[in-house]
Length: 276
Ligand code: PXL
Image (cartoon, rainbow, N blue to C red; front, top):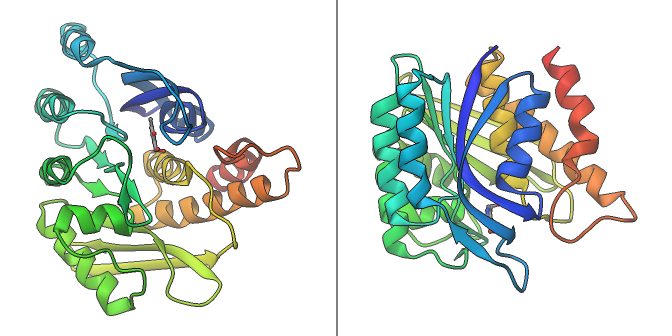
């Protein structure tokens, strides 16, 4: 069984980061190992939350992994809270990357044209440097705009998306996948560019007239889980679009839905059946 090491926060309530990555990667049939970056009472979209930074714990944990000769088939970073943590990830990659280790960076820091609370342009610049080390990065258009220093475009066409993708790979990553790309009325999906083969991949599915928190984490966890099960990157991105849509459909039809996250739990049968 493949083993993913994912480095991101744990928000106790809120269905994002580790509370999404763990169940989705497990359901994909892949071992999920974690290195928590911070403990929050909830994610930062709640009106009030506690935040305990775990940076000081991270290097001792990684050193102990090293002493125990633990290794990982993939390293997956999500929400990271500080410059120190970005430096730590650099060292972690240097220490744990083997020739076939897949490095996936989801540069979680912004959406809908704005940075999440606590993030700055300087952080985006440093995140762009981390993206250079990745095999696959999974930003949305807002995160891409901040990393590339281009204005956030609410209206765009296919040529714009392709241009952004090529620029993202020029940061150094092998493959960039932009999420939340809507090029046709009523449709939304993923657009990817593979720099090594100079090829694009686009897949779209139904666009629901709603948006929910945490869909980016659902998407990235599903895509990487699928890659580890042997699907190609493009096949994995396709499954991630379908699984995210199914999660949103489950949320939309749940009369007891909560405001803060998606019902990916009820979409897990789709993920499991597509991977079996
Ligand atoms: O879903 C991304 C995410 C992860 N972790 C924390 C967050 C967010 C987005 O707001 O606040 C703590």
